[in-house]
Amino acid sequence: MEIEYRTDPEIGNEEINDLFANAWPNHTSRDFSKILARSLGFVCAFADDRLVGFANIAWDGDKHAFLLDPTVHTEFQRRGIGTALVRYAVDTARSRGAEWLHVDYEPHLDGFYSGCGFKKTEAGLVNLMQQTRVE
Image 1 (cartoon, one colour):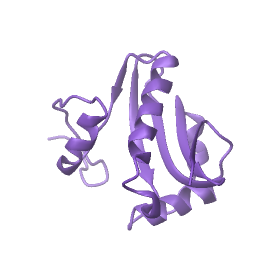
Image 2 (spheres, one colour):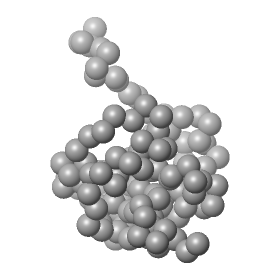
Image 3 (cartoon, one colour):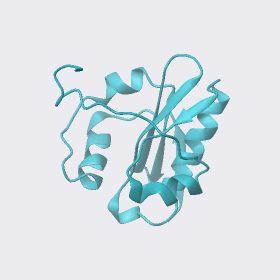
């Protein structure tokens, strides 16, 4: 089956939420239209017009972009779709003026992201839902 990659296609919440529910066991349905309206861009993978992959490119409005939510349907994993989504996202961010593309990931994904050209850096993270104030 051929996979078609599209940047910024017309896509609805239901399609994205269905994909996320399949790929992420604890996914809670959300309104992606607000997210995508503020994105630098997003990339989707389709198999016969069925959404099977997604990656969002958030940004700071200037030189820094952030790869968020790279997701592939479980039936289509391990076929290079995730890698292709990331590469399309990198190209999209570059062509739209970003100089840096950041990504946060768990240690078990190090091989995947280094294979996509990302270099390890140190970063910090605060879970705002669990921390009430900085001490």
